[in-house]
Amino acid sequence: MTVEIVEASSLAELEEVLMGRGKAVIDFWAPWCKPCEDVERELRELAEGYECGDLVIVRVDASKASDALVKYRVLGLPTVIAVVSGRQASRRVGPVTAEELAGILGCRPRG
Image (tube, rainbow, N blue to C red; front, side, top):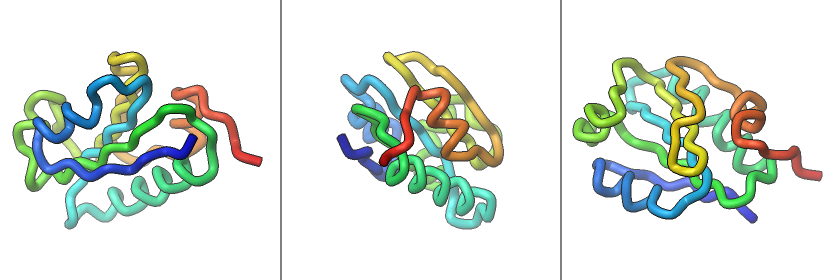
């Protein structure tokens, strides 16, 4: 299965994407956030370099989705939350690698 990367600009959009998903990574970012660019590269590496089953990566623009920031208690950027079976499995504020996320989500390297 391929990993889907989706953009969300509100809490409603985020929750719609998450509904019924087994695994998800929520990436809270902003256009002005330089460390967020590094996280985006790592998430693309996760999507392209690992077999993760039914995984969706949701990129949430913090400058547009203040309602999502409140619900998920995001206080700093980048914040990356891994969700497994509807429950938060991990939360990182700051850099995270594809390898770390793959371990949390039970993904295997491709090839």
